Amino acid sequence: MKYLIICAIALVSCVGNGNRKNEASKRIDEDTLNATLNNVPEQNRSHCFFRTEGTDQQDTITVKLTVNADKVEGEMNWIPKEKDSRKGVLDGTISGDEITAVWRYMQEGMEDSIKVAFKLSPEQLTQKPLKVNTTTGLQETDDAADYTLIYTPVGCND
Image (tube, rainbow, N blue to C red):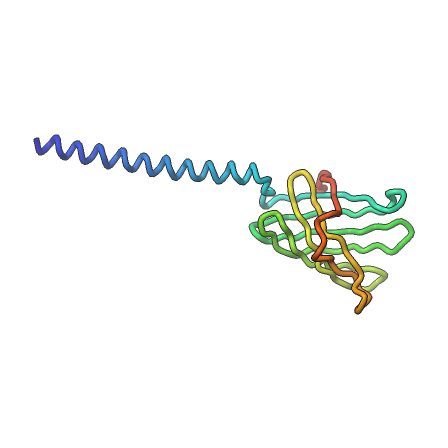
């Protein structure tokens, strides 16, 4: 009788631990599925995008981003036809799919920077547009605007 009770307790303990392991595995699988369904960008990988603008689509912008946990680094180059380009680096953070970064660039031999805001998904990169601050005369991100500038993904040249 004593042996039977000990076996029953051992059996219940084993079954209980198995359920906890299955529940933990199920939670991990659900988290992975939710991340996939929500199009969370892959970590530690470069994401490259291209955009054209202007009356004849003659101006180009390229963006290369590397996401590592909540940190984002990269390059952004604005190359308009027959104007001085802005080429520089991006340094920022990502929360969910929204990126806030500072773009430090060179233009006409001068260094400058501007805060930029992006939304990243596997299918595209979108950006809040820039506007001119009438007080300072400088460009800044239009925080009240939606993400309306659309970039198309392209292969990265690593």
